[in-house]
Each structure stands twice: as structure tokens, then as C-alpha cells.
Amino acid sequence: MTSVAIAQRAKVPAERSQAGAAATFLAPATLAVLLMLVAPLLLLVRFSVNRFDATDMMIEMVTPENYLRFFSDPFYLSVLRTTLFVAVSSTALCLLLGLPMAYTLARMQSRWKSACMLAIVLPLFVGSTVRMVGWMILFARGGMIDSTLRMMTGHGFELMYTTTAVVAGVVSINLPFVVLTIQSSIETIDTRIEEAAQSLGAPPSRCFWRVVWPLALPGTAIAGILCFILAMNAYATPYLLGGPRFQMMAPLLYWEFATNNNWPFASALALILMGTTLLLTACSNFLIPKRYRA
Amino acid sequence: MSELRISRRAALAGAVALPFIPGAAFAEEQVVIATWGGDYANLLRDNVEEPQLKPKGITVVQDVGDEDPRFAKMMAQRHLPRGPDDVVCLQGVLGFKASEAGLLETLDVTKVPNLVHVHPNLRSGNYVPHIYSLQVFIYNPDKIKEPPKTFTDLLDPKYKGKVGLGDGNYLYVMMAAALAATGDASKMTDPATRAMMTKLNENGLRLYPSTDSIGAGIKSGEIDVGIMWLARVIMWQNAGIPVAASFPTEGSVLYVSGMVVPKNAPNKKGAFDYLNAMLDPSSQARFAEHMGYLPTVDNCPLTGKIGEQLALPKPAPKMFVPAYDVVSKTQADTADWWKKNIQHT
Image (cartoon, rainbow over all chains, first blue to last red; front, top):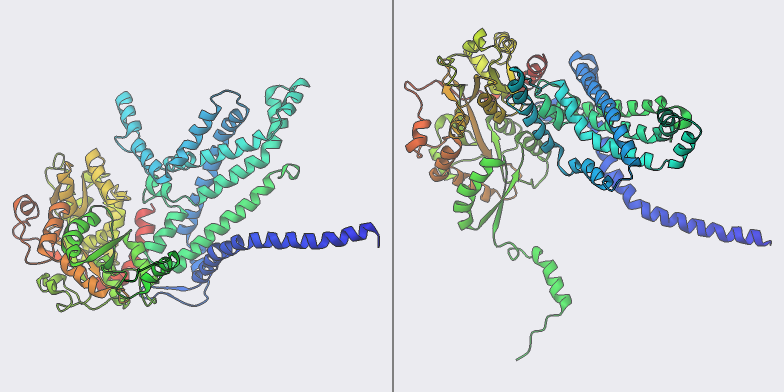
């Protein structure tokens, strides 16, 4: 028997024991995920094909009527459209505002860098509902914006219960996540690559678009996806800043679940929202050229 | 004399076994009440739980939350042999729904002696009314000299963009519209009711996400009139908001908030004690003073400032307890209509 064969034979039990150890370590987390994520989802799927009953809450059966109700009613489709509009526009705004901030932060050499980072992270220390109450004070009639404009021009400007207010609120919540994700992605790009591009005569803008942007694209895409998912599922912001007339999927879902006690339809709404988000997130991957994908 | 020696192991084993020894671990009785938070929960603690139940050895745990999820939880846990709550606070419509679903323990004077004092029009077999209030028109007396007297007055173009309602009160607002349009508060799905509500919406109706935001709307001048509970008017008046009440000539729908005992309540005896204490005139008077709600018992006369604030005009306004059986059947349909035709415009 050659020494190579002996070594290979010794390697197999070692690999097996490593796999066993890995499985032991992974098992609790996998079980927890299965129990706490997959099981409720399966339950949700089951509920979504039941029939609503005002007295018994739901009657067990297998019917597509909750899904048909959603897709055949222009009202629900318009709610989905509004949700998509808010999610796409707030994601675009977050990327537009977040990219320069993230780049500046990543390349900052100043001793104020930590303070700037803290300033971006600081809003995350306050719950989103509390922050929305702050926006309400700013946007409301007699609030800071309205009062200032009324004093200066004689005409007020009410932003409460408008689409603009909701998009601004969602952007304010998601922006720190976007900045931090892109910033960490840019941090990994070696500055010497930019220096090389500049030494070869590329102006800063060309250096950014031809060198930094393609390398930061996977991180930016992740930031965009994160922002999009958060915006699609926004509840407190549309509820507080949009008011009862502003309909998005998450508040509608809660209304069906809690106010109407229509668990089957609420379950169908939850799955439709999740499916739409997943589908669009998967599709967004195709927007990135294949060679730049992570 | 032999020395008693307890090893560390024995002490630990004893500590572990203690909760399983009947009567040894829990000398105090515990009652869990699922309730609203804020002032309501504080008043329950300060006027029912601490002064009346604590001396009897009953400790109360408040399970604070919104009413809709509370009801949903109750429905979902109905098959459990032991539910999580002993007493559940519900307003009238949901109380009736819970009763219809067979979730509730039957209540009578043998279990809750103070039930004998409850106003007859508010009584029910398994629902104990705690507080109630009348639906009224609210207006800013600094701006409105001739307050609205009927629902139809709100449709006047002079109120365009100046009428505000709480979205969460949609069911009771629809009852008010039904009362004005058909003379029957339960006819919420009647075309005449819906037409009247649509007209109000077209008159620039402002919908607010919470009851408190209506008070803020009046204060900021965003709205001048609205529909609200008399109790809220008194709370806002006490907070310095310029608001007054006007009683609808067609009558006022009553908002009743009460408590129930689920059939699977772990401590029914404690729950009955809680309900009895809640109906006590001393605690009823405190709720009237602090929240402006009327007592549901006949042995709690109100005096002083609150007596004046809560005094009903003469002749007394017509009052209607909602026809809960009809309302609960049409609620889902009404909610759907409201969502699509009033919210979504």
C-alpha cells in the first residue's frame, strides 16, 4: 500500500468527523428555522385556502377563492400597485442619496469618520414608530414645515396623509441600512485600483463609473434589495404618515386579520405580498450584468 | 437534640419541587385581565385592582393590547382547555360576537352580585358592561355658532373639508348614518345609508387614523366638526381643546365597553370577583371623573363638575343600544364597503 493511499484512507474518517461536527452545530439553528419560519409559513398556506366565516372564523376546505378575490378585484390590485410604487421610488431615492454618502464615508480619512458613522447609525437606536411620530410633528398642519411656510409666504403646506410623506418616511427609515451596506462594500475595494486608474489618466468621474461602480455593484444591489423588501412590508409609516386613505399591503393585511378577523384572506394577502417581493427580488438580479454579480 | 442539616442538593431539590406542591407555592390568587392600556389600564389598577382585590389576596396581571388582536387571540385559543386570560375587555359588538361563538361563561347575580345594579338596557347573559358613552356631534364653539343637529347637517357645503372622523369608529359612524337615513341604526348596508355616507365623504371628509388625532385636528383648526363619544369631548375639554358636544336629534348610538369571562378562564372565581369590583360605585365614579364615561350601574350618582359635564339635556336624547345581532352579521360587509368606498377615493 502506497503512502498516498494510506493518507487518503486517514483523510476520509477525518472529513466524516468534521461533517458530523458541522451537522451537530447546524442542527439546532436548522431546527429553529424549520419550527419558527417554515412551520408558520405552511400554516399560512393552509389558512389561505380556507373559507372565512363570521362566527367560526374559518371553515377548513381547499378553495382558491381568497386568491381569486384578490386578483379579480381592482381595489386590491390598486393597493398592490401603490405598494410597488412606494417600494420602487423609495429604493431609487435611497440608492441615489445613499451611494454618495457611502462612498464619501468609505474613503474618509478624517478623525470625524467615527462620528459620521455614528450619526448614520444613531436613527436605528430609535424605533421606527417613534421616528414616524417625529415626522408627523414636522408634516402636520401647524407643524414645523406648515408653520414656517405660512409665516414666510402666507400659505401653509400640509404634507400629512400624502404619498410624498410616506415615501419620505420610508426613505428616512431605510437610508441607514442602504448607506451602511454600500459603505462596507466600497471599503473592500482597494484604493490602489482607483489610484492606478487616475495615474493612467482617468478623471475622478470616469474612475468611479469604470472602476469603483462595477466593483461596488453587488453590494449596491444587496442594499437595493434590502431597501425594497423593507419598503414592500412597511406598516407603521403608511399607517401613521399616509393615514387611513393611503392603502398599502401591510396595513391592509392587518385590517383583514385584526379588524375583520378574516384570517384566510389575510393569509392569502401575506403570501401574495411575500411572493411578489420574492419574484421581484429574483428578477432584480437580472438587472446586474452577469460579470458583476456577487 | 438532633441538629437539622440541609444539604445544598436537598435545598435545590426542594426549590424545584415547590411549584408542584398544591397550595404551597401560590398563597396569593392571580387573575389575568386582557385590557386596553393607557388611562383605562391605570384606572383599573388604581381603582379596582389595588383597593378592592389586593386586600382579598388577589393579584392582577394586566395583559395590555389592542382590542382586535385580543379578540382574534381569544378566538384562536378557544379550543385550549386553559386559556391565558381570566377576564377579557371587549366593546359591545365584539362581546356579542364572542358570545355567539360560544366562548363565554354565563354570568348572573350569584356569581357577580353587583349585576343587580346594572341598567336593564345594558344587561346581557354573559357580558358585563363597564362604562358607556353617547355618540354626539363635536364642534369647535369658537368657530361654529350654530352646531350641527342631524347627520344631514354635516353634508352642508359650509362644512366642506371641515368634518373629521376616526377611521376606527367606522362601524359606529355607519350606525349614525343609518339612524339618520333610515331611522334604524342597524341598517348599515341599506343603500340610503351608504348614499348618505358617500355624500359626507364627497364633502371633503377627513379621516383620522386614531381618536386622539381628531382632537389634534380640532385644536389645529384642521376640522371644525365631527362625530365622537361624549366621554372624549369631556376628556378634551379638560385638556383645554376648544370642543363642545351637540346631541343628534335622530338619537345617539351608545358605545358600551365591558368585560367577559372566557369559558376556558383558569381562575373563574377570581374573574367573577374582578367583575364585581369593577361594578362597585367607587370605581365606576372614578372612571366617570377621569375618562368621562357614564356608569353602567344605578347606584353611582355623579356629583360636582363631572355631574354637570355628564348631565344629559332635557328632554333626554334618544339613546340606542346597537342591535348587536344584526351589526355583528353585517360588520364584515360594512368594513369591506368602507374600505373600498370611503377610505379609497
